[in-house]
Image (cartoon, rainbow, N blue to C red; front, side):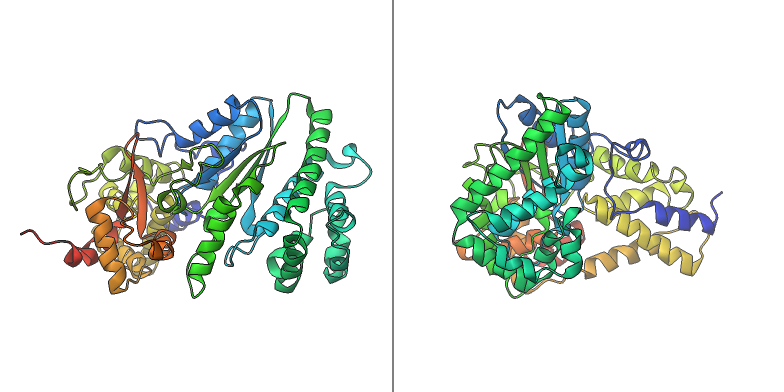
Length: 455
């Protein structure tokens, strides 16, 4: 029989801020396979197959909402590629390298991309690769080539300058120092083509060293995680949206790095609002859907009540059971299934809902297992209150429910629809071969009055 002390253990077991690293056996034991597949092909396995089948390094786009498990799935793919013995894989958390709350700039992205490769090569290859660290070599490249950023050297903090022999600390300056970031961008914007060639040459030199030290068969894969968190909210939402389109669509040729496979995570609204987004790169966008906790609606009809999808809900419950096998001694299975539906298939929100129940139970100290739905209902209300909606939003979400898609009524509203995606109000699902959109489950009652009424 569970005690209230076990509630703390359950709470701490649900760390939704940490992705699973499948190179670690303890993390591998927590992983639920095929959570996003629903009987179809895993989009991540298909992405890996594309990389393995390609006869030359390619450029790939990967997307999904925050909280569905993208970072874990990307690290699973990295693990699987490493296991073949033919791939040197770098996974870079770009949230630590870029300010994702500002309009993204191609120049900052390319600098940070090269720095991520340099950092990992320094950790893995160390002094065996040559006299200077890759971090130092990259900084020298920036300050001594025809791009010539020499004047920026003095703008690095003293501590940052000391660290250049290890971590590429100027990327921290790019993220945190707006004036330094602006000067770098001004210096590079005037010579974008030349700078791009310099980046490719630097990356080629790192790849040559990897092949020399790890084997000529080695292909390098650079996975840029967290770029899907580029924000399109706040007073500069339209500017941020247009910057994302500029980088990943208009300037797509600069994303193609011929010496490494590069996987860019991108915001989840891109493939829906810019369907051609992968066309220039010659690839399909890899879309990781929400866990399918609803059955597929009849897409030829309008808004319909959602029906729980048992396999998806069972997978969500399993993701918690693996972290705390005795969870049903605290939260009965029907409540766990209810919360899975309330999460709309977001693993992060599912964990948050359960942790909210745990916190409230610690205060109220009820009998265990929980005897009724009062605490889950309170947790759901807390999550719903995080999603305030204007009347225009409610009208738009009603059309999403009717059309099972993004319901874009005007190209002028692209950034507004992107904001609803970014806020987790419009969600995407897959039924094996096709995709559809749905409104977050907890908002259905608010949206209902705006649905078309039967004649």
